[in-house]
Every structure is written in C-alpha cells, then in structure tokens.
Image 1 (tube, rainbow, N blue to C red):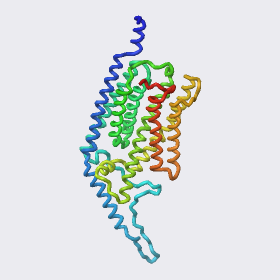
Image 2: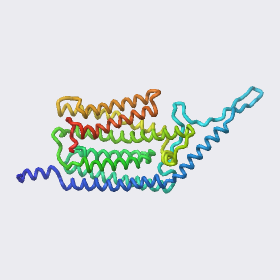
Image 3: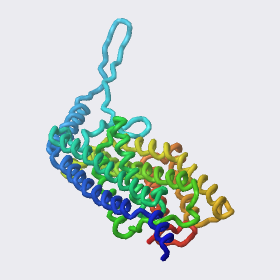
Image 4: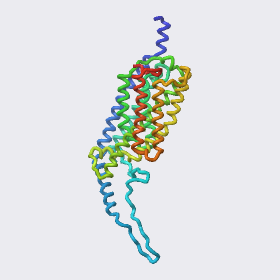
Length: 368
C-alpha cells in the first residue's frame, strides 16, 4: 500500500474515535444495568402490601356502597312526589371503558420506592448521555450519519427510544412505569448489537451516499422508537384490562398480579395513551415511506420496486392504518384494536430485523 493510500484510509476512518465509541456503548450498558436494578428496587420496595391493602379496601368499599344503595328515596310534598335517585357506583362508562382510577405507580405510593424510582431515572439520564456520546463518536469516526449498518441502527434506535421516554417524563407525563420495561429491552437491544450485529467502523456503500440518508433513516428510527413506546403501552393495557375484568366479575387475582398490575395506570388510560402515541407518529411513518421512494428513484431510477424492505414498510403502514381505522369504528375498540396494534409493531420488528438479516435485497445493509 502506498503512503497516499494509507493516509487516505486513515482519514476515512478514525480508529481512535471508533474505539471511544465502543467504550462509551459498553459503559452505557453498565449504567443501564444499574438503572435496571434501581427500577427493580422501586417495584420491590415500593410497598407491595400497601397496594394490596388499598385494592382490597377499594373492593370492600365498592361492595358496601353497592349494598347500601337501596331503592329510590321518595319525598312526598303538597305539590306532588319528588324522587331522589341515589348515586350509582360506576363500573363502566357509556363507551364501555371502566371508570377506574390510575394506580399509584411503580413505587406503590411508598416514599422509599419513590426514592429508588428517582435514582433509576437519574441513572437512565446518565446512561442516555453516555450512549449518545457513543453514537456521536461513531459518527465522527467516519464523518457521516451513524446508521449505515444494523449495529449503528441499533445503538441509535435504543438511544432515541430512551430519549422519547425521558422527553415524556420532562413533559410531566406519568410514564415512570415504563422504565423497567424500557431498560430491559434496551439492554437486550445493545447486547444483540455488540455481539451479533457488531460491524467495524467503515465508510458507506455507494448507494447510501445521499442526503436522504439523514432524512429517511432518521425518521424511520424515530418512528420505531415511538411505536415501541406505543407497543409496550398496548401490551400492558391487555394485562391490566384482564386484571380489571377479573375484579369486576368477582374473581381474586393472585398477590403477584395485584402488586404489579394495581400500580399501573387504569386500562382505559393505557389504551388512550397507546392510541395517541401511535396516531401522532403515523403521519411521520407515512412521510418515511414517501421519502424512501424519492430516494429510491434517485439511487436506482424507480420510485417503487417491491423490494422486501419496501414491501414490509408498506405492510407495516397498512397494519397501523387498520389499527387507527379500527379505533374509530364502533365495536373494534379495546382489546380487538390492541391486537391489531401489536401485529402492526411485529411487522415493524420484522422489517427492522428479519428483512435486513435474513432476506436479500437492495436494502441489505446489515453488515453481518
């Protein structure tokens, strides 16, 4: 190799920055692990017995109120008869969703549990900053966007997902119950990235040299992170809905189910939150597909060629469109719509992992 070629290669990839990036990613995993244990402590030391007692007390009160509700009180007067209806204990609203208050949160209404929760959020912020530093260092090492292969896509995706969670907390949204599930999946995602999907820092393939890389892929990553939050909320909604159904029918859930599910927001709250998240990001996902088509025309001379990646992106779009339509159609709300939402997110995951790794095509840039 000539001196000029060696100099050009050295300038193309800054190995020192690439090494720093790897160190920061591993460091963020260590901090995420600490955050994971802090979230576990929030659930464990946030008084489980208090939650169980509160749920039991509410049930007893509701039963007492229902039994105390007698016939209407009749008041006779010279002008006629006035009938005073006693207030009813509302179990379901007119739309079919329960009128159930939200749970106290993962801390279970306990000061010690709340302290562990605050520590967990602080560690999550630290891990997010360290991981963000790793993503930036990876980009600086090759002077391009840090999502040219599946490894880079994974570390960026998990960073954005945590950023979405922290942004919701900053907006004073009560989503700390999401923290344990988030750190668990982020650790799995990063573990997969640094083992199976790891790719050495290198330059892009020619087809990716376009400003559309910054537009199309960045919006796809952001959409995926938001859809992930919606999917977790939907899954928890199904569990909480089953729990409330069992209580309503007179059943008695196990102590573990009570201590966990009673702390979560009401099923109606989780359902509404998931719907708003998915509905808000759907237009951006639509733009992502359109931007990809425009980039395809610039790179390959055609807007759409039914490449596996294009096909599954469209299938994901159709699935979420069906979910949103189902939510606006009477009779397809609640659990039925939730199942469609989970199927839609499964399509996104297959488009994310399956197409890139197992299916060949023009979008096969996994690097593994």
